[in-house]
Amino acid sequence: MKQFSFIFLFALLIALVGCAKDDVVTPPATDDQAIEEMLTSVDSVSEFSESDEATISDPEEMEWEKYGFNKATTPVKVFKWGRRVNSVDRNVNVTRFGDTMAVALLTKVFHGNLVIAASYEDTAHHADTIIRKPFHERIQRKVIFARIANSDNPRRNWKPVAISLVAGGALPDSVNLFTIEKLEVFAPADTYTVTEPLNTWLRLGNYRDHVPVVRHGDSVIVRLTVVSSDDSAEAVALRWAAEQGHFRERVRLVSTTPVSGGYERVYERTFRAHLPFGRFIGRYNVVLDVHSWGSLNDDAMPVSNRLWGFPYDVRRGNGN
Image (cartoon, rainbow, N blue to C red; front, side):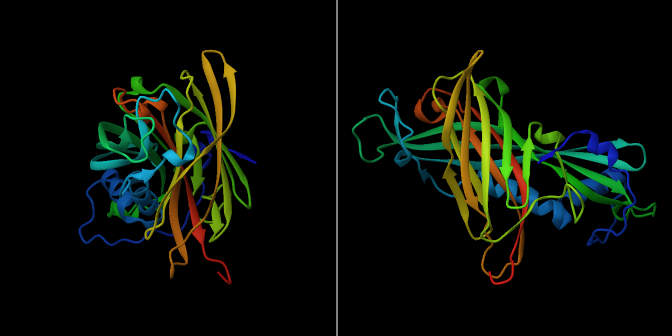
């Protein structure tokens, strides 16, 4: 089992060689500008970032009622729901640690609507009402950069060496009635336990504590622990995207334990790593997307949501 800590940030001062590809004709003027530019131009970082956005936006509403989420007292009976993103605001804040290391905090704020196909009749077999709830969702990730040169071109002086997990939540934070306490990922080669996603570091490249690598077709188990003041279980979705496919599945509630001030709930799901036909490697995020019961089932409740995302590489093994 691997347990990560923020200490890794300061232990990463090691000799590094090589440089990421440089497609820029006019070099950036400052180191901070170079780092910001590399977040969208270096494949090992940009593909994870692009996966963030592709994963959480639904191309259409998806079925939900068949999983038995509704209760007899539900104000609305939900058949399908989806998150429609209309716009994204992006911001990068760079913090320097001496002259050898920098940490870039990438913040995205998604604006859109939670679209719910529902009925106010408990006996209905089809949706007859569309409910749209506006939401604002902040999602963050950190990237560590190490200095590898002191040239006149800042773009050649830095290299991304590690990334954090993704953490997000609805704004304002006061609408969220629960917290995510722990994420466990059981991959074929290792187990990962995370309690602080933005202070959990996965190295880029073939180093110890690197981004997990799984093979096309491998099964991966994810387990999420949530603490909530709500006596109704949350709606937890497992999301992942792979260019030619958009996947979302219900994550099953496996246990509920009363705790001080509320309930501790554990959710678990197994998914299979996927690569589109013809691809031999892909960089993705698996996202655990948690909505409160009222977000979907009460037309008057605001959107209450938190999510954590775990990066992973998929490679196609021999014979696949």
